[in-house]
Image 1 (cartoon, rainbow, N blue to C red):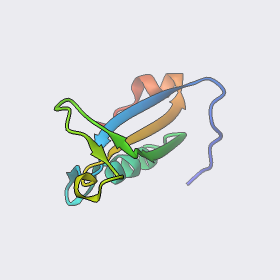
Image 2: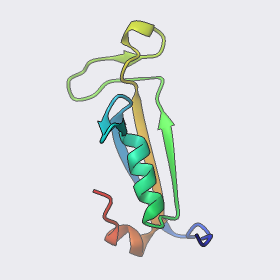
Image 3: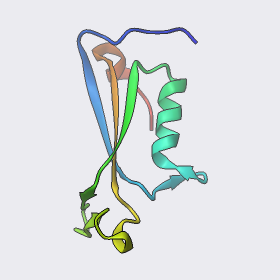
Length: 90
């Protein structure tokens, strides 16, 4: 695999998901990260939230273990402007 430097000007793609979401038996964030790597994306990071809620307004927090089952996760992908426009991760 060739090493690539981060673009000077680029785009950040943010994907908001829940930690418990899965795709083909693996965490969805891991599947997205692996696909981005296979596609040769310049960079990607997975961030785990400590508290948050989604469209259903169900609060998830790590402060109370009983409701820490689906904490928010953000997958951030960094890519050049040109490749970001063509990027097909879905």
